[in-house]
Length: 295
Ligand SMILES: Nc1nc2c(ncn2[C@@H]2O[C@H](COP(=O)(O)OP(=O)(O)OP(=O)(O)O)[C@@H](O)[C@H]2O)c(=O)[nH]1
Ligand SMILES: [Mg+2]
Image 1 (cartoon, rainbow, N blue to C red):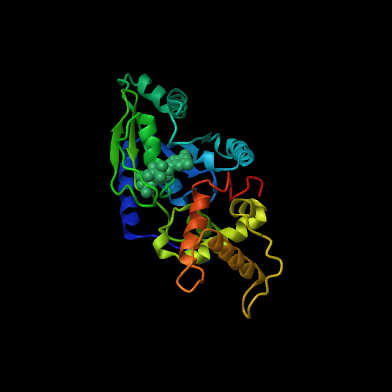
Image 2 (image 1 turned 60 degrees about the horizontal axis):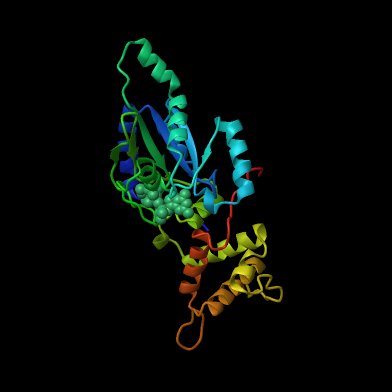
């Protein structure tokens, strides 16, 4: 599946971020713990060049616990650390402020040496669409100031949020990059809901999810829907791969089980696909990581 999504408002976001980054002391990039590599935006690396950095692995509650630990270790080696997070919950503010301050330690020391008055640390919060930037800011602030929503593209303009005398946060719109060189990256981002669903064939995306889960998490779909996910006796049609024939059979079984039928008794593929994707994204299929740390 070839996924690409780079609407005009993202070009505008890049320009705005390039300007605003000059005003901040640190760039906090929020990644999705279910796809820690695919959710890293190479353009944010460019925008944040030379700045202090902090990486947070959000939606850790939806990701595989063993993989969370493995990713944390890997990022400790590669990036000097990453904090696992469920941004909807109360977050450990003290710990986070400590991490931000230690990432900015050099700057704080420099200001002090120059005899400058200690001013709040300014942090730019960025990441791909729908990763939880605004939710994180609201939890950090302890009040709902930034607008959130379960679809990509909720935040459209920048918004400064003053936490206390110590920290000021800048919320930014979700940002992707112009071309996903690796097909899997685009697919991963579509699966977790960071690409506008309206531009993608949802039945293909649901079938892709089925194929990926049957291979990486066998038994999960079968158990959740009470169906035979092996679909061993499936016969591919001409030009159809065995894999996609199997995924289609499973999607049909999901539709049957959930009463997604059209007049005349056929399967309502679009409803069955929406259910399949939603069950994964909301965590009803259990904790799932699509990208393995040791791969
Ligand atoms: N399960 C879970 N859901 C989360 C978490 N963080 C955010 N969400 C949900 O993810 C959805 C997107 O959250 P937002 O905070 O709006 O995401 P955003 O990154 O600001 O998105 P844009 O502004 O569209 O780029 C919302 O439905 C949140 O409730 C988390 O850690 N775990
Ligand atoms: Mg937002």
